[in-house]
Length: 516
Image 1 (cartoon, rainbow, N blue to C red):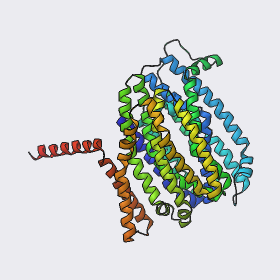
Image 2 (cartoon, rainbow, N blue to C red):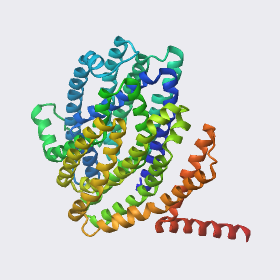
Image 3 (tube, rainbow, N blue to C red):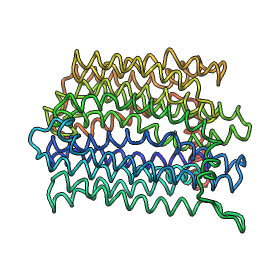
Image 4 (cartoon, helix red, strand yellow):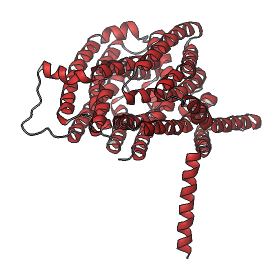
């Protein structure tokens, strides 16, 4: 499948998954309450932290699958690697899940600040979280295999189906059986089992058959020998994943202890809206990473750099309007989404900082893609380690001084510093002579027109004082404004203008032929 089709399939799937997850939150709160929804946010945070046990193996499998398809790996070595990683995932997953299950009472009584929920209910909910997390985590291995094979149309459709079951399907269950947390998490365990079974079957259908009379071994020696060639790269990915989780989740971990479960629920849903910005770039990276690794394996580094810059512009024209729209109109967007003035007042400022920080994060991830494709993560590890030290230091001080809004200050400040101070070193090593053009042309030049359009819209609405009071009207207004801002950004790009011109010429010629 072509890269364009891969990206389109990923975007359609991710947009649907993201939107359905965001749209359903007010309904969950309606049936569960804010405090119970805090458990859902805690569950999402635990899933990310549990992912650290991955040790970079999923992305390693994705890369090795792409390299196998590029001819850099033989069938036996590839299948042996898959077998070894399966053993690692199952063993580590079981150990991690059991430890989380056994510590459920301690987590419920000593970490979470429960106000109205029954302690036994919360303990059981945490136990169900442990099972669901393990099932979804093991599924990630087979999802990595499918991504490396670039079967994104199937994976996108499957993700959409599972998201429908996970987010939509749970609603009638809660209506029928009740909105208690155990019902929600028991249902998530069931969906996790279905997801794992389907991904396992699909991954094995995509794998090449072993040569005749060859069987994969289960001995410890053979498993270690299969993983050893990728061990150094996996460890680099593992540390990168650790830093990524620390960057994106340490604030949520600290606040889950500092805030009441109800207030943590409000913080969680606010950050969920801001995460929509990074979700925009997620589908592109899923398609881009194996393709860039394949180009490097084939020795086409010039094409790799060209693709790198083109995809940067493609992300910026969507991320910049989304992040500034959320930042500039945060309180109105939260009110339109939830219908709660309390949530809008408490979460508005937090949403603004996180939306802008996530927009910068989506762009700053591109140098990592470049290093990933070339199999050298040394500078990424150094830079991420420095970022982590700065971010955690600012975060602890800011949250203690300013509360929840301090986390927003820390997030935005650290991301700006990383983009401006560290990415030049990465480009000097892996894309020499490209940094200034990348920063000024690909990022600033691709976003400035849409940002100016949003500022003009904000000024006009404030000057005329014509903001609608109805939620549905507000939602429709922001959808239209966001679409127009993205259109302005697209039209500011020569590449997209050329595509539009070509499309219009084809239509004109087609109409002329029909008239004749």
